[in-house]
Length: 289
Image (cartoon, rainbow, N blue to C red):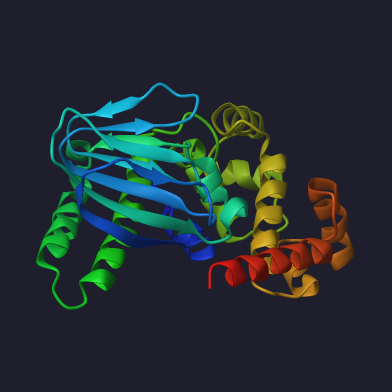
């Protein structure tokens, strides 16, 4: 009997949310350039026609059938119509909460290309997106954004369910046993986790669990826990939470304990890191106001 699977995405997306903003629907007549600024990824839906996706240092990628292109992190690229065909395209900016410190965005490949026919579970959502774009009824911009949010969840689910990630967090979440331990760790970072606790969650011996975790995720369980806690601490600090609160919430007995590990990993104290991020955010908001 196949082991039951926990909800591997909801808590991740609650802690590190993602939001879409559809900014293009319709015909693509000329080359469209997308830069790597603003700390946003990009999702394209090629509805019809043929395009080339161009990236510096990469071989041009030609798409001749309806497809989804997903850049989870900022990535400079261009889309160029080919063969004189009429190209129908929908495009959205994807912003993961926390930007570069979002572990979910970091776990994804730089580019994911999927034929729309492969996304059977998202067929209704994609159809509704195109219908909203065609109808341009009142509220359609909000509807497009919300539907694209749903599509993003369905794409992430597809990546996990089809084990499309070869290593890292998403590869671990695709494993029926490891996912139980990873989900528990994600849900309760403040807990004093030991190897035997995580192995028990996975229904495995300590040695077998440690070996399988390293094979699938690429690092040892203890190292993963530390990285997860620091990522979560960075996210909470970005929200303006005081260091004392953050320390307890991510599993450290005191601000000093968090500070030691944080400084080892990032080279600065939590407070200094938060101040730097706050200043960068203020500058970005001023430039793009």
